[in-house]
Image (cartoon, rainbow, N blue to C red; front, side, top):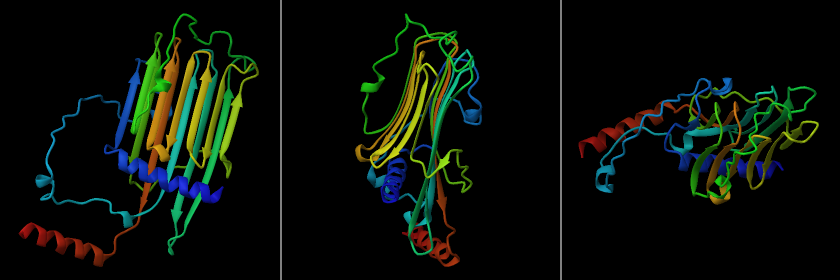
Length: 270
């Protein structure tokens, strides 16, 4: 499993760095407050303007970037949470980390956790907010080569949020969970609310199932896909999918900084 997780971790890191050109991507629906663990994220939906440029223009551009040799490791956090109006909360979360030592060896670690809590005796049947006359379907059939975030809502007073972020802050926080456990699952006493997460050799899968819909996150590096899906067929639901990749960078030596400075100076004189 350790070798599989090492290969999976490096593949996910490559996939997200290659497919996500923005530091933040989010999609939401509804007006109630965002769950606490996403409260710090920017929810501004201002439109982006894009202007295409040719290779002849890009070839003359200079700047700074994170070279491959600067990345020494990463931490990937995945979390999905669903809060029903009757007080039941379904949660699935996990962390995959990879750290490179001085001789270039990569060590990986994984933890996972799933829980269903709250409500009267764990029974979410009453006042779950589910609407039997509402339907939200079809999102599972969407397939893209890249990152997809789909929110389907049929109901009132719902909050739904998909977010994916990449940062270089070197201060990643590991999510709670059982160490060295690649999967976790939980459900209430009636089985109407389920939460699960799995880290496998083919990717990562997170799924929440409730009477009012489902929330999933799927990462399949082999197919080049990262998918976040919310389907809410009910009222007063608070749901969120969040994925955060924290890249750990190593300090550049003084000699390397001088070399890059000289190289940029020579390029600017051409």
